[in-house]
Picture 1: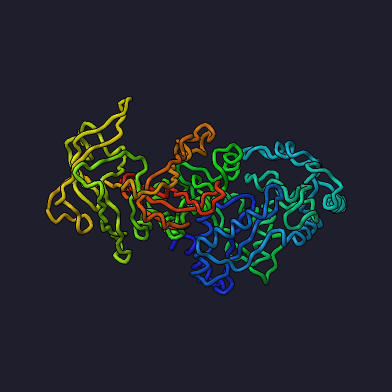
Picture 2: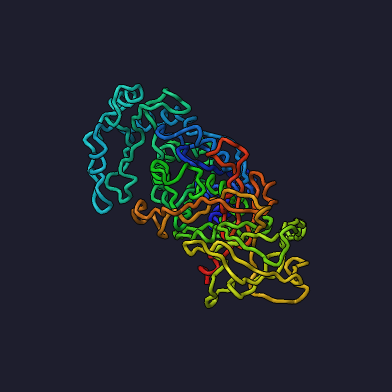
Length: 553
């Protein structure tokens, strides 16, 4: 059990009724969910499964600026993709009236006041944790004055930023969150759900715990940056809680930080506005939608969260662990095919120009149920440019003049000569093949002839062109959040190419996953920039090589 499970078990031991356990996931509908949110989703919903407890999906829609229906729908789609179902779909805006009435009660109890000062002055009066804060000039307004002014705030008599409602707690507290925090601010913006009903909106701190209380959430799980806000969370609950109702308990866990990426919605918006990425679901960023478009499976993502665990320890997880988990899953479920990304022409001089052989190839050696397919072999082939060197160098075991290699599922060939263009660029490699060296059973040579290297290839006349997107990390440094991320954007994070595939890929459809042999794992998706909805793009999901094992060593 992780530490949160132990806390819940201790609560049950003390007599907390198991049927009263409830959880919630409270995203803001102002952007797409990212990999960091998956940890919170996984934690809440898996605990819900374990204790057979309801988990609410509650949208924290307290700021109409930037909130849109498309974000609400994307969040729901992401949670479904991960395989979870929520109990009730709730919104903080459902409780605006109740929150307003509770705020009036705080004013009546002389625990909240209207402050006319600017946000700059309010901030300066808070001072630092090592100094005592300065009381507002309006802190001792009468209850009647505060009730009157707060009603005028609600009715739209004041301009934005002209005044706020603050809790009256302790301006000398060493916890900055307790220094008379703001409860309401004026925002004359149309809300996606309540329209123009309200022009004052509650802050997250005032809303969070009260919504938990209304929904009778037993354990409110938050990321670690909310730890210092827990005293405020509890203070607000002290003002409204009744003895016969469940009082929510806030528990914090470390957030998920991954190397070479950002998860800040503000920074992602910057990348979109500056055309670094196309949208919130761009495969180069680690939004859940981006990962889905890149071909990540929900199982691999959840296995990744399970691997890193639930702790309070702050750290940065190397993104190669996430790639390891998707590679681990795709290795079991993805059929193997041959695709040449950067082709060079190979001619087998002693092979008949009029002959085509259909070689048998295993679709997935990890699972015999995938069966086999037939691949056409002919005189003219494509191989990868980087699989050939004119002159062999040390530790280069691929094809070179006078050297032998095996063609996957086919024959051993030997390079004899090359043809160059007028600029000295190699256009063609001429080879001979050994007719007795055919791989008759998935690469196991019956003639026992051994070569060190096996290359992939495609028959030129049978090949089909496909569009491929190759990806690199979007940032050139491990922790872009610590520095000016704008200075470390990788301008080569995407490479768009036309590759040549064996003919079986002609039957590929959206959602299919493949291992392009010796290259990586790829996902077929619809090309969003083409009116032809049938055209596919193959996104590179992960490489063949495993960087995580090297990092672990």
